[in-house]
Image (spheres, rainbow, N blue to C red):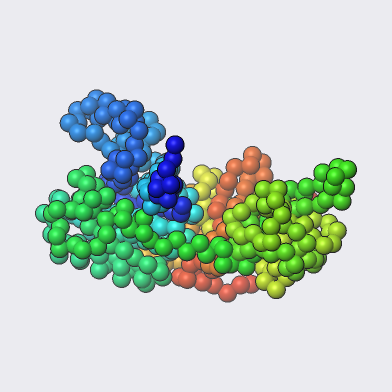
Length: 448
């Protein structure tokens, strides 16, 4: 039986965070250390790691194996795919994404960090800030990750020297600030030895800040989605048509941002029709208001033509509707993306036909320079694109909302994801002036 004390200790807030860094900087070892020292590893998992470590001739368990789950990862000793882990402490619940460090897996880092509240970027204390460190900092800025932690790892290999840590921290913080990263916290650690990961280090008495886990447990998760203008992508129209509810007509979905209340004036997009919220059902119970990320059913005062893919928003804070989408994208498919490419664009619950009208520039993450008019994008490329959609689309700027400003470009032939997009100018160095694009005509019915 759970006591009242245990109930009070149950974690209530959730932090999504990702790890990033160069190859062999110790990302997987850090994650393994976090899981092991926070008592989040099951006995059979630890036994499997001990057996695998022993078979490789290692005296101590290789904690990196707790996250390197693919066979190729274990054989090569690298991280390839994004490994998600779920764990909790008495203070907070966590969803962790351990992302690869190789340049060719940049797209995987984008996937892991796109929903993160915080990114932990590791550097090897012996090597300092390297090219891949700058890439990951740029991606964190691009994806608008609110909090960044610089973990200077392998301090045991530089004799726990404070000047080494201070120089790296100063260089990285200056670079991240230039990129527009809102908050950087620096921590000297040794993931292998456990220094400043979960427990404070006995070797670095000159450091008075939090351990990595302590910072993860206490960093503020703003929950800004609650404070943004309300957005409800309609997933399903509920019409039971029963004797008990002959006139019931509700619009169900998960609130993507903000909050709704009974009596609020709303606009349905892209049609632009307006009405008023007459009721809100939450888990089958009428409520006066609801907020992100709750799943609800909205009842409206007027009988409107609304279907899956429509967006319900407050009339006084509705997003602009456009058929010309300018965005920063990360191309994730192996097949290239070219100008004139016919795609499907998925935004929320809406799926529309679209054509890639223009690729004005590709961003070089090494030095943040722009390569004009590349003609096509290959896997891992970051670029600016202009997409023309077949139907009007209500889009927020990604800089204002990471949820309702994001979209996917999909291959209409096989349904595979081609590109992850962020509407608007989500990266300051890639700024350009919008140009009106003429309507396109296509023999196969892609007329827009």
